[in-house]
Length: 195
Image 1: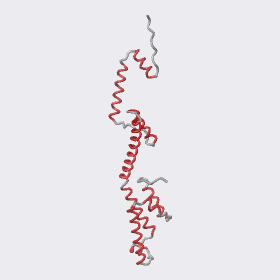
Image 2: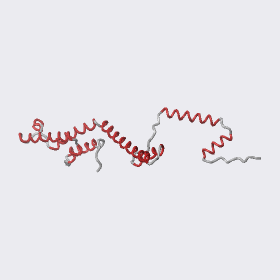
Image 3: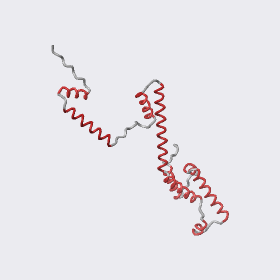
Image 4: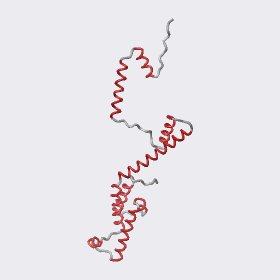
């Protein structure tokens, strides 16, 4: 089973809380997988407090006595601690996602630089080394690097297209024919000169 990261934990905590509230039994190993060391200590302390309470008092018979003594069973203690953990996890969600993003970027950088360094070490240079780095990124599942297109880039491309259209309008028939052949991928036929 894959290791849980910060984005998985809130959903798993919700599932465990729902199971406990329905009265279903939840394995004790969930305490270690879903709670950090501080939360596990809080769970142990809360249960030890309940154990001490049980040694001093007899079990309450009514709900009023239960609330007065702050008497809870193991399930109620776990629900309380899991709800606190869920609040902490939701509060730290943005920081956790940023941390995961930094880890992902560091891994991608390491993969790219290793492949680039290997290519340079083999005598390849410039574009070939960059290509080797990009191929390694794709193989590792990071996808192709995508250029970000902003409004300025769109405007520049639009202006370039307008300039090209103006230049094409000023071409002679022969130049236009050559341009069409180039676009189609055909080479223009050489004209035979008459002597």
